[in-house]
Length: 255
Ligand code: PEP
Image 1 (cartoon, rainbow, N blue to C red):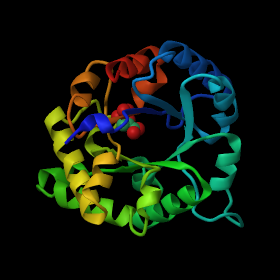
Image 2 (spheres, rainbow, N blue to C red):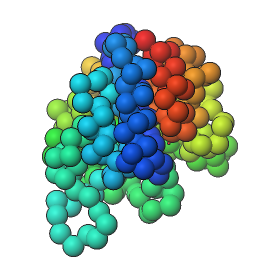
Image 3 (cartoon, rainbow, N blue to C red):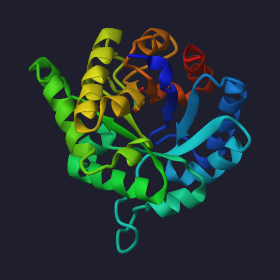
């Protein structure tokens, strides 16, 4: 398999951190540090209220801005929710969907992940779709079945054309924010299983063109080795994305 056909994507997930003024400064600092580093796409997914200042600070730089969730309905009585059209108009290009924290704390299911993904793509957003096993599932030896099932359910009904705007982030839940990282071989193996599942749903060509990131305590110390794996096309980075100097070193590792 020729990995060089796929782009490498390094995305930060700020989670619930940074006020708008902090976001403005952090995006500007990150943009300065990654200037000219065109070997990968660089995205920062920020809280909704930070989008305006983040988009402004990212203008004319190679940093793209994303959101961290989107509702599946177009409009209406859904207090506290944000639609895909609203996001698009604010200038975000990407949206994270199905992050394990949303699945764990906010009742997100594969069905709602699928609905959100369809709504985001229909509006013209690009999606970073997160999936991954929890610790008990890994310990029971069912990681492969779990990620393959999530891939099928989360992508159900998406056309091959829509898949061009979908990035998958393989995020073993036990590695998120815990300091535990999947070994490069574990990350490669599961990203490979997801790729095979996508090949089964669509074609091998489409699967070979799909960007599959690893996420889970990726940092400036372990990024190079994780990113060297044939099935790992980038990273979704939580904690380390909040510190521009650390995040930019991961971008360096992806060059
Ligand atoms: C994440 O939030 O997607 C993530 C991978 O977090 P962390 O890098 O902090 O583990």
